[in-house]
Image (cartoon, rainbow, N blue to C red; front, top):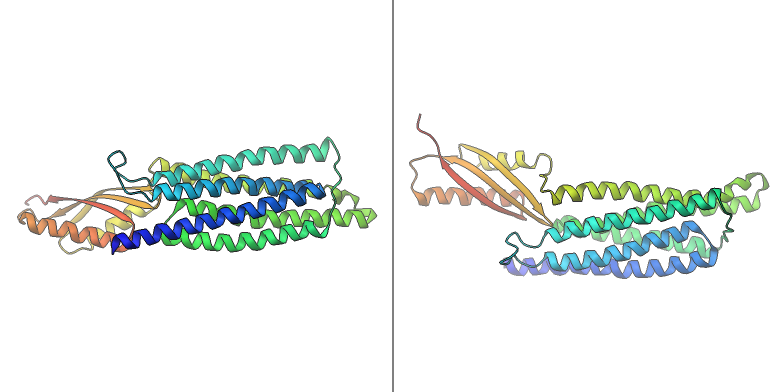
Length: 302
């Protein structure tokens, strides 16, 4: 039963990751075509963003496939770190995109002038983008929370960011449209380039946030408060006098827990073993994805 549930979880994760690949392909293609036809830097910036989202979605799909493999002779803790590495790769891609967007926006604001043609297609592509991004982010977030997948969460974060950045681009296009029709507001002609800068700032913020979390995971930094929660769960098991030396590390969707407990020193081995199993089960009830190791120690006689 456990094997079947694990297989079903991996299948669901792969399905969510693959659907985001198809969504990114469609959005990237649509934005490139409309951006090239209208000359909108905001839309082209979004196309570049979506293009990197496509690469990130592909990396996520591959990472989810690899991370689902069981532990083997060379990877005793499984392959979960592949998800963390893919999230770091996505972060670097996003930051690289920001450099290009900021450079091009500054060029258009202070160096050269580029005419932006605002049409119904400009608004249509961004509207469709928001709808797809919203749908995909909800599906990915739901799968990420259900299966504790950092790779899917990173992918969902990308699509969520696209919603805000697409909204910024729409505001920029509205500004260009107003500048063409109201003489006194000609300065709004630069709204498209300013909107592109807004996209870049949004992406930088999200990238840094994601990068910090990813690096912490790669460095085996325990989530805040997690060790204390595990200690409390273990000490609530009857027969456990104390829980200490709690060590926690994450690897993709997996959580590895190592704890030491104090029990009566005169217990037979079978009874002490039964207690460790009870502690393991209690921790897994609280953290279903946890791989738990319990070290029993005898209490010193008073």
